[in-house]
Image 1 (cartoon, helix red, strand yellow):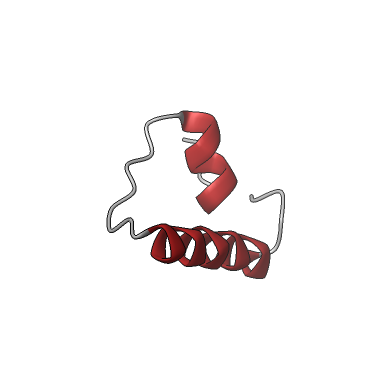
Image 2: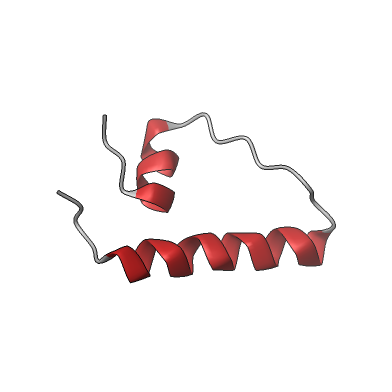
Length: 44
């Protein structure tokens, strides 16, 4: 079960996407389990 509502994760990803677009970045590679969990709620 996620620590936050689905909407919270959706907002986090939207903020990341907006920041990437502003910086001209096309691709994000997430290697850290902690960062993946922050963005998606997945803790597997």
